[in-house]
Image 1 (cartoon, rainbow, N blue to C red):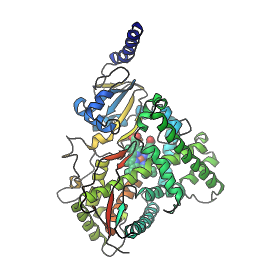
Image 2 (spheres, rainbow, N blue to C red):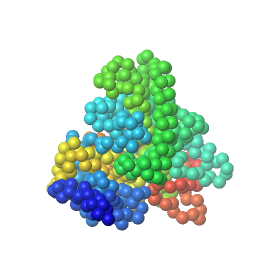
Image 3 (tube, rainbow, N blue to C red):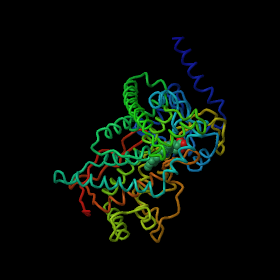
Length: 498
Ligand code: HEM
């Protein structure tokens, strides 16, 4: 009995002494010994484990745009307001990541490599290298657009085959854009694409989605002891096995690219990296094979799934909102005239299509929480102190569902981004699907271009509708780090034969 009381007192002291010492701590739900704030999260949202960002968003209505809470024994600060997120993400002291040991075991040879997870000089230099190399590869320039257009043509033919193969025109859509989007990334990486029938492509996506779409990956990454406890233990080993195969594939691919490196031009990102490695350019330490493998893996996990899930959601909303689909098609047809293909040049004449993309990005929030950060010294956001070393979550979903800023935030209303003349309003700062500040997404340009061109060209070629006598499609998401729509099918009518 006394032992139990002693244990209880020790646990309480361990939990509450740091909290008493933390003056000006952001407000937040009650912290229980061992369990932290989990009971409050559970009360705010009965599906808090599946949708932690939604539970945090609901709690923020009670506690405000900057909250503190405990997950297990660790204290976290959660940012949900625009001013707080802006202030935090613009500081040099807030670009560091926490030590997500279990995640690095799964993802990157036991240490933070690539560009998404490291910090310090490695991150700084590799982010600079990635930014420069992507620019050289024509992000926003013609070459990039040509690659995307070519992929659009292949995928339009692919959808035509699927829509006509058994006569009923019904096509499962939730994963349709996985292959084309992986190819957009693959082009950036090595200048080539896979055939859609190539089994390696499907396998790569399967390995990757075991990681990005696993609900438990957040808790496993954030709470290090979970990997020893069932059912997280099994999940940890399953994801690790899949990611080991993925990395094995990339390792072999990098070796093959090294062996066939052209002397006078770069086929893609890998070649640029290998050339920097060979020259010992910049700081040679960071240009290792392992760094390259995880760099390429970052392209896929950060870029491919996020674009394909955004596109899947775009078509889901088009099916649920046939009036918006018709209006978008009219706009596209008036721009196209006799031409076949919507291009980047048409963008200024497609305000409604662009507004649809923005509204889909707002509602889908495919990366609802940015990867976590830790301040490297005590920082102040308004009157609140975030202590050095506290884990910080940036809840982008909350920005997108803020009830004070957005009218009817749960509703699909692309018009909210248009002015009285039907033109796009200037940028709305509350829409931040790519994050904000010093670690903002590096693929924003390619992602925006890909989503817009796919959507416009597909709407010009096909009409998408709900299968007769079925209910409106659910917009509820599935997934983990990245989220996407549940399984859904569309009736696909070909309206342009060429
Ligand atoms: C619709 C598509 C996309 C969305 C919604 C998205 C969203 C995001 C978000 C929210 C972050 C975290 C920002 C932060 O930590 O504050 C991020 C980081 C990143 N994204 Fe994207 N992304 C998309 C597409 C892409 C693409 C296509 C690429 C690659 C070509 C890419 C590469 C990256 C990289 C490398 C980072 C890490 C940046 C860093 O930590 O310094 N993303 N992205």
